[in-house]
Length: 229
Ligand SMILES: O=C(O)COP(=O)(O)O
Ligand SMILES: [Mg+2]
Image (spheres, rainbow, N blue to C red):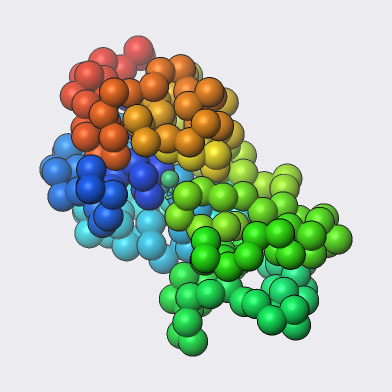
């Protein structure tokens, strides 16, 4: 019988090292051993969370690109169309800018529904052009995401829960930024790590004392074996 609650986990800022870079290897064993669904809900492009699940050797339950891509292990659903983001980027390039990741751009290479822009690129012209096309720009602290404002992680988590049968009332979410607010709104228990931005801090049921994976590991210890079911 399952006793661990389902988990909905962000990657950057949440599974990363307290120093702020790279995945903290201490999360590998608890997530591999978790006896309930673990959904990775991220702003990163589709292959990154897939690879994370693959190397953790857990089922690939992935909400990627801030909800633009939902993968249940059986079916992939694209909930947004990248065309508007590409038009915005064409104008942003014409103005002398660009995504800012270099020629090969592995940040966007496999991205299907939105475009991520380096935080070093100017925000104001990006926001102005995005607005003309009905798109929004969100700042996760790791990238600007040029996206459809009607798409978010929370919707992707709802679709995932429906498809694979997760009781979200029982689910525990951990996150660090504005793109986790919609996740926090659809789960029973939500936690913001101590490094979280204002939006995530305000939306979470509880703000943790520890940063990054230190905070998340503390939550895993607390909720392990404590499913409400
Ligand atoms: O892609 C980002 O900017 C942040 O990714 P995250 O949602 O996993 O934190
Ligand atoms: Mg994050």
